[in-house]
Image (cartoon, rainbow over all chains, first blue to last red; front, side):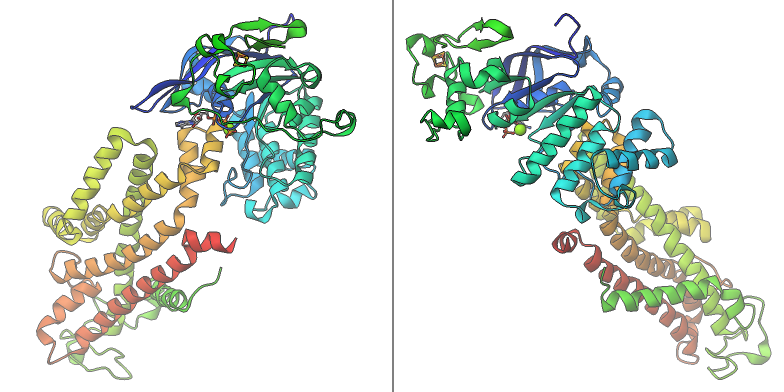
Length: 326
Length: 273
Ligand SMILES: Nc1ncnc2c1ncn2[C@@H]1O[C@H](COP(=O)(O)OP(=O)(O)OP(=O)(O)O)[C@@H](O)[C@H]1O
Ligand code: SF4
Ligand SMILES: [Mg+2]
């Protein structure tokens, strides 16, 4: 890891200021993603994954704002860029696909046109050439008969096809980083696997780095080389995916691992019953003092309720934030 | 898309008016202004004079046919100007919000508070009669409904996934407005525009009737009614036919507007897909 990282997040804090409250929704978040690397953010709903992603592309709006820390893309600080410079990055160097393929496409515009728009917008192509490139882009995401499909409107396509179109749009300009925020939650299971496989293969071919966001630890660990586990606005553990099941260090990660349905060899260990983590994620406004996981943590002691744990570096680039880590 | 009966009847009436206006020189029997001949003065409708003749012996049918040109030009052009103004103001106000939104809202409320015909009357009084001033007066005074609809649509569309997605993909504000917002609000804008066109045809007639719009001898339907005022009992055909032309055109536009509303209504569209 000697080369400069593609994107580097350092001590990011995102504030939520809705007049009544002024609180940190995300705090002390740091991670880096190298070129062509895959990194995943996992955590329960509301822990701040999506807003972290929005901060990366400079799109946090009103009640939310970047309050501290730095986000560097190829060494350049995103917040220091002008609005036009940020726009030139978005969709071009950093692309994003979302959870809802149903609503993320313009209902009154043929899908081919929506893909072609990317070439016109970011690559300065004319419409004729852009339309041809759009057909190629659809072919790349394995949409059958792309030269006919480009004329279809989104409502004529199935959910899986629409998500393929979204991927075609996102990868149209050959971005360096693809942010996938719960890209398959809205799809049924068989389609999910296809889409994930497609996304992974396309990015691997092109050397596109992936930041994958999900609450499904199994999925993220499967796609990504490294995983960051978020809880209540903080990264509590960061590990290589290979290590996370066998040697996770944080009680919350352990909880996530235990709540996964077990297959194959691990099921044979006899711990096949699913275990849920008791309790719920606290709301931003009443994050507990000390370690934010302490009300739900079986190992919590006095120090956990008063002092926030420091980062402990583990071997092989892992880290954990827990007073009593394994 | 399934068109209702009202949209079809309205569309046919409007198409007829357009056809008549476009081909007026070929459809008319005589010159609408110069074709006067006192020998034929005040003939009632007959096989030769379909709609009768007036006190100067001019063919009312030919004048009504030519009147369609003027009425429709005023209706279409002025409503187009209104739609452009309304959409531009409403879209930008809804999208950017802030002080610009306040300014546009204030302006819209002002326009809504003053009846647009009174406003147009005032502008006509300043500019003087004539087609150009009519277009200006009617084009600048009836955009408030379009503006309201455009602003409201923008506010609701702004939170749609595809507008957010466009921002993530690096679209600029203008591109978002033109590709994501505008095409998704054309339905209601067209409905308002169609109804507004009917209103403009009526307004033209009213202003011309008052002598502020198209002046005699040029044949607008309103100016013909104005001229026919004194002979309404002795030669009723002078008023009946231009009146009928106004009635059918405005009825057609209103039916068309209502019919289109049923087809283009976003709720009924999402129910179908
Ligand atoms: N526009 C907003 N205004 C106010 N609060 C917000 C806004 N967007 C997000 N939040 C709050 O910030 C916190 C983090 O939200 P975020 O969307 O990042 O969660 P997430 O981890 O992506 O969850 P999910 O798995 O549900 O997508 C949540 O508590 C949410 O309520
Ligand atoms: S710091 Fe304490 S409360 Fe927090 S996870 Fe570790 S043991 Fe549990
Ligand atoms: Mg989210």
